[in-house]
Amino acid sequence: MLALQAVTPAELTAALPEVLPAEARKVIAAVHRGEPVVASSAVRRSAARAVGAAGEVPGLTMVAETASAIDPFVKYLLAGPDGARFEAVRIPLEHPDRFTVCVSSQVGCALACAFCATGRLGLTRNLAAWEIVEQVRVVRARLPRGRVHGVVFQGMGEPLANLDAVIQAIRVFREPCALGIDARAITVCTAGLPSGIRRLAVDAPQARLGLSISSAIAAHRKAVMPIADRHDFEDVIAAAADHARATGLAPMWAVTLLDGINDGEADARALAGRALAFHAATGVRPRISLLDYNPIGGGDPFTRSPRMPAFRAVLSAAGLASHRRYSGGADVAAACGQLAGTRAAL
Image (cartoon, rainbow, N blue to C red; front, side):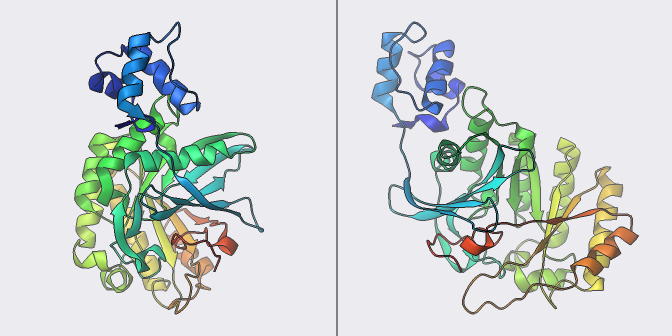
């Protein structure tokens, strides 16, 4: 059966020749409004029958909806048809009544980044495209007012390890008669899979790239990101440069500062050098996003760095702007690095 919330009108007509292009747009629009697909002045009876026989709108189970008491972030614990649990987060934007949805792409994650709670779980399975799309639909349906303005693939899992489903979800997010989200408001964040980064530039060229750096010093990066043993940092940056040249979009370089691990002056200088070299090679200046570490539960090996101001000062002295990202919902384990498919807050 076709999951109707995860196809575009063109894909629907390709799968069901009985449905005309104009009818397919009406069908997809009805699905995303939560309306039944029925015969009407715009959809012939034969087309509605074909859609009903071959299509469905599967749903996720809401296990828990938890609002932060300290900011307007909301975490949703969801379950797929097999009971596998994963999370999405509603993120408020500065513009009133606009929200971004942080979505998961996998149940768990195989990459085992040491500063990420999801990395402790291992990988259970990939999410289907409809399960990714449905996370946004679930959040949108529960908005008190306003609309979903953007999507960030920064929840559970490595998006580029499930790239077919991620790209299909992006197609549906962008589709005007589906969710109508501007592709430039969609960011795909990765720990660094070079082939996936290059494919993203081809198959979703208007979506933005986010890259988890941790440290521009290779030994420091390897200490907390096992993926660095398989994909050299040089290769990851080269792929990001290819993406920037192909798309013209500035990548986001994310660094979670860990006390005594990657927050020293040498790390800041190395990051500055990499960013300046990247700009010289591509004509695109990366957007540097610095994050405070969020605790990830029992046996937590890291603490939040007190050197954020000094780190930013080094970047500024090199002529580089940086952004200290606010990561909300920490009291309900909804902040960056904390998602682990659990009901309880840390």
